Image (cartoon, rainbow, N blue to C red):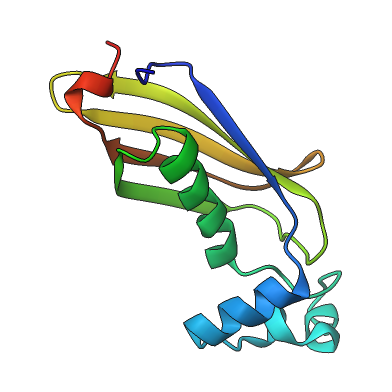
Length: 136
């Protein structure tokens, strides 16, 4: 199926403590707001904050497996974090294609990560897609 403006993809996810420990191991990031609940609460948070990198992994899944899909190659991501996502809090990543260029093979999208009515993060992406897979 060709990629076209207006196409949408979504991914629901919940980050658990096991995922947090795994990310801490591979990133070597032991920042206390991500690992120490007492510390995070002392800083005004409701618990430990999910690593932004774990949320980006969800974006990677959507881009690589759904839209534009396994034949695309990411060339740019931009993300802004608005509010914290907490361990065990259900979230959903929503992505929409905003521009396609048949001439260059570039697909631009915008995305947001929501936890209920709370906007956790938002941003934009660019991917390079084979020309044959773009609908102008």
